[in-house]
Amino acid sequence: MFRRLWSGLPKDPEFPSDLKGLGYFINEEDEVRSIENSDNYFKYFLSKNPRHNERQRYAINEALEKEVHSRLEALGLEKVLLPFGTMSSSEPHVPIFMSTNLKAKSRVVLIFGETMQDLGMLAHRVIGGPGGVDKGSLVSIVRALQGQKSGPGDDAAPGIILANTSQLVWSPELKRALCQIGAEGAPMPSAVHGGMLITDENRVADNRTAKDHVRYVFEKVVPALTRADAALEIIGLGDGADIVEDYLDWGVTWGRLQGRIRCLAILGGYKLIDELQCESFKTFLREKACAWIPSLDPLGTLISGPDGNPHTTTFSRYGCPVYSSGEPCYVECLLIKARTAVLDWLQAVALTPNGGSACYVNPILDCTYTDEKLPASLDPDWSKWQEAPLDQQPPIDFGEADPRANISGDEDEDEGEGLPEKRKVDEDEDVDEEAE
View 1 (spheres, rainbow, N blue to C red):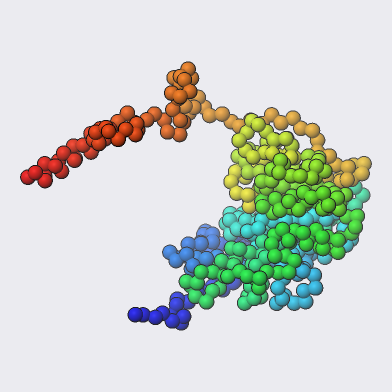
View 2 (cartoon, rainbow, N blue to C red):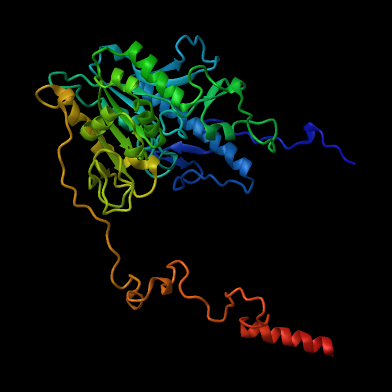
């Protein structure tokens, strides 16, 4: 009998949380490249051991997070710890970013990201690959917003709040908040531990879940740090957009906020208009919201109107106009590809003449979009089945039945009937061998 001691378990791999220590640098094109070979981007698969690769990813994500946060602070944003009253960064908290002079702003843009991305990040496939750090993070979005105007007669840049719907797991050992992916890659007592056990100790007061965090931002952060008459514009990404819609879809909540929220940009959300209950919020979506979705069509192509498009298989019942983002696959890349369209729309809303953003209403659009049909050469020929009775038409997924197969279920039939000829020959050969 053998007994394995805790001290005998393999050590968890360790990596430095800085780019140079990991063997990378940021080149003149703002891209992360290998020091050893500047033609190479970040390499995830260092080993066949998954834990080894996870630990390296955790380290480089932490290094890139520090880089992005330093750039956001250089643009005039400050990090605020939630809940209010948190005295030290070593106490359980959730960080967010906001403009330093938020109280002076007549227009405030709130950005709610995906629940699997660290604060300030959009897509690590862009940050650590082709595109670069600014493009793959919210740095580029913040910089573009700071070049806009707050409204007619107000040339000041809008205020910005970057919410944090992802880093909601508190690590007492690391003294920091982690997203779910970060919690999986965080240091463990050994390389074979099952992962972090998330209990009440790992939750932050009033920000236990993404829904709690969205509620806290709207009910605590916005009233405390913005002007009472400041117009609110919201950008929701992926499941972050769905959570925002869930929060606003209540008569009491919407009654408090409908006078302040001027528009909503949805990127990659999947909230069905038929699931919403608040009629005034549905009216708001129709008049003052737009959605951008993954699509192969050029950026800005009108995919659907507010009532959906029956001529496309793409999900389109958002309750608002739906446009192509120009990004065919990844939700995390939608705002990167559709940045100009989304931010130009926000600026157009803010600069609405004769009353500003409060008077903005989406124009009535004639949507003619239909899915592209397959060429005739690729379309299956169903002509011979068009006149056949329904019970004689084969299912499209299975085609015609094998004529040699016994599918009648008759147990009295000879066991050998219906079997392929080769199998029957093989069985006969086995019989002859036994006879010899």
